[in-house]
Image 1 (cartoon, rainbow, N blue to C red):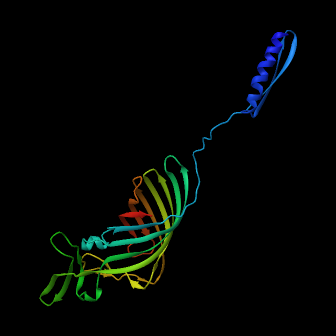
Image 2: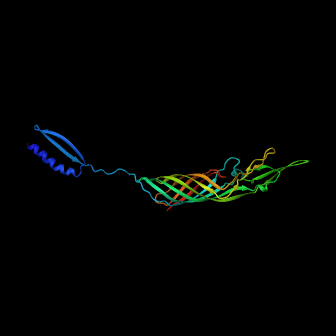
Amino acid sequence: MRLVLQLLFVFGIFGPSSTCIGGLILRDTIVIDGLVVDVEAEVRFDSISTDLSKRDAVVQFATTVNGFLGRGGPPTGWRYWSRSPDVNMQVFAEVFGFSSRIHKRRRHKWRVHLDGGFMVTSLVSIDTSTFPDSLIGFLPATADDPLRMVTSQQFDIGTETDTLEAIWNRRAGITPFGAVGLDVVLGDWHCGFTAGARYRTRSSEDRPILYRPSLDGVAFDPGLQRNKGLEPMIQATIGYQKKGSPLTFQLTGLWIARAEQNQWWGIGVKYNT
């Protein structure tokens, strides 16, 4: 009987204290000297949350400047003929964005953002009104020679073939654009994808397509006539931003549907405010 009283005394001490940390009720019975004793204990486990994820929404502001070179393209491309690339500068602002942190200890997060800005393009071109009637084709520029026109004239005493320098120029244009993008930030690195459209503000004729000299074929085909309107575009970016720095340095590719120069590759810098 003394043992029973001692057990009841022990449970009397630890029973109330366990209710302070208890939330789980345990029931059991024990037999002591032929007597059945019911034991009831309430235990509470106070755990620390291990959820490291955090979701938040914040407004994002950033200004980006990208510089591009146009794709060289096949032998009909203008970089092939002139040895001078098309260039493009893209300036835009990330007007707002929503951020959700995936892992609050490792700076992992994604952002959905809306961009607006403009592009300034400079395309290599040539004035077809300067082409002579006797033109039969072109010779591409080399390290020593410029782009040349080849002419051929038939005389009673024979055929005269000559080469003349083809003077090319640049055609500049400014086009506004807007886009929606998604960025995934993994520590110091991020990658992003953007889709949108730019607006061609005026109608224009594409550059002519040049051909090598041929007595049987044509020397060039005139460019397509393009009307003003929207041109869909997509852009992909890989960037690096050192922790604590407002600057992001990035590599980017740009594709513009129905554009005279539809593929661009370049580098850029983003300033995050």
